[in-house]
Length: 302
Length: 227
Image (tube, rainbow over all chains, first blue to last red; front, side):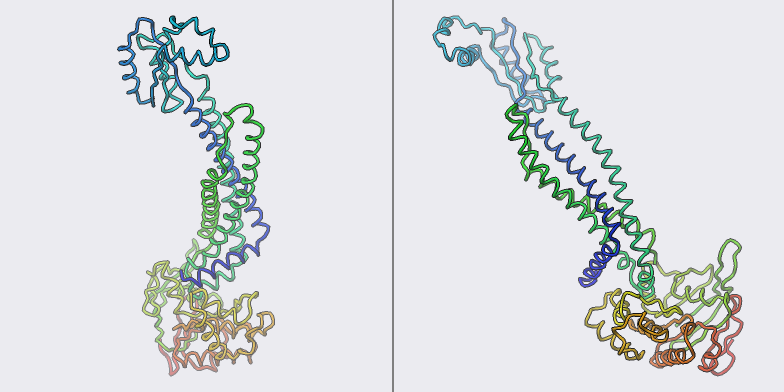
């Protein structure tokens, strides 16, 4: 398509919108609702993943050994556990290190009380491994494997429930996905109707275009442009709304919730919107393109 | 320029023949009237030539193109060789005379500078230069048909098809239209006029193809009987 023809068709696309205001507004509103839901879902999923990732980094399993286990056995176990694909790293804490940490934590204010244990480490049997996982969901599997190993007295797992976070994500995702599919179908249907109305209004013009030898592409282009413009406007509106909603949510989390728990963390605005803007625009334009293509292919024939 | 070989077109389940084994040949630069009563098959013939319809059987050639086998994407190129004019003008009411004519060029991507020149030329040819800013509703029937003619001619077609171009016009305006068509033909364009206005046909003294119930009943040339 030549440059002047491109701008002509684009201009005709805008002219079509002007002629067809009510349908235009209905289409924009539906696409906006659809893109808003997608944006909201994406923001939630991104943040749930972020929280899981953060939790994952802090979650670990602590393993204590039977009294008869020797240093050689421990070194051997360390080597074997390190080879498991679910394990990212293993840290060994000797009884001495355990006592030092304990002392610092509990006898900080009364160091003289700890002096009584100078030659008799009460944590002599508290050598341990701290095992970090590659993924939080592996926790149960690794715990079961550790418990089945000989020489292990006790396995302490992290109380943070990875599955709860994942389940929340899945439920939110499933419900939103259903709503998005319905809105997507309604959006495409409405855009298609808007374009069909435009085609009906301009039936005489289309007929003349065909008689003078305009190509199929040229006849259809203004309507496709119209659909894409509607789609893009329908995508920009929820992006602006989401921007303010997300910003308020971040402020709320920082000011209110993080005082209770550091688990309430949110991804920065920029990180989310770098992904959200292209996805929303492509989605809006895609809905417009599909809706208008359905209408033009059905009602415009050379 | 136009050749039909045993062209048949049937409609509906009862296979009503709109055209029945029609064969005819129109040479480059000819001026031909196609006459006949309603239902004779004139409009069907018109639509077949611009490939708005596909024949049930037979072959059609227009300007060297085998229309019957033409691919869909090639149809616009066929139509750029054919200018069409209708009884009801089919002008765009929201555009003025200049815009209506320029529209035909714009939609086939002619550059703006050439559009201005070409539109001015056809406005002069059809004698409506002074009305170029008027809207269709501000024009008489004769003037509207001249605009329609200018629009059909602006792309410099090799063939001009006119379907009842004087059907809605008084004798004075009909004569103006026919004079323009004759001038267009004199400049080398093949002109085919579908009409049932016997007065004009007699007056013009051109080749006349007479259709009746989808059959060519006679084909009378300028100088005598042809077929």
